[in-house]
Length: 312
Image (cartoon, rainbow, N blue to C red; front, top):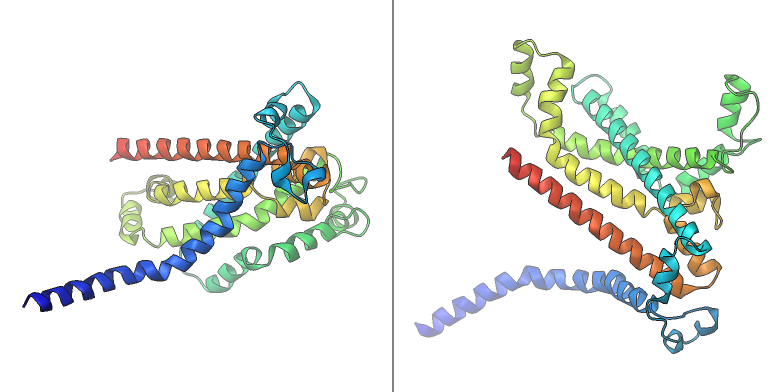
């Protein structure tokens, strides 16, 4: 009897441990891909790691907090450039996330009711999200060309909205081009997420509201948006992290040296590390960026949790 009980306990323990054993390889790979480079980057931020120590970066002299002081010294050229890049990234993130959420919410609400061709429209809306980022952004870079691009051809040659063909990848217009491409790539994800959230709202609520005389805008304000609040909390956070850390879009549009108006902090850190070969300073900037994102994420989660408790 005791032996049978022991065998049952062993079988139960094996059944309980099996899912964790299956997840173990993926967990180890995730740690190797993300955690190990993060720790090494934090260590390099405390070293004077330049091109002279690339062969053996462990031999680079210890710098302490010197790299961090240089990065946050906003009276010096390095600090001023980093601060400028930070404000550009903040403005870019607010516009890109806000427009992506607005367009995605509008499209999801319009696609909520059944009509002929809705499935086809949904598939078309998801194309920007499904396309590989390199193919999509390189296509946009060709479209933004001054003399041969489609954008200037439509605005100048066909619609005659501008007197002269502007440069979209140079000067202040580069910020507009960057926001346009980012929104084009991000809003389908917002649309897909919000469409899934709308499926959980009972149709009876809209029917009851219509019987009570509520219009479309009142239904959206009183039913749709409050019901989508949990989905929006996660969606906005994910879009913020993706957009603030976006490297592929500016790099593919402008190359290694982005214009000052579109100097995102991700490309700025890349230039500080792989163009000027100062890996210590670049690692310090990366650590500061990580700390900023952690603080913003923690504050956002704390704020949303308090609002949830207040409304509960």
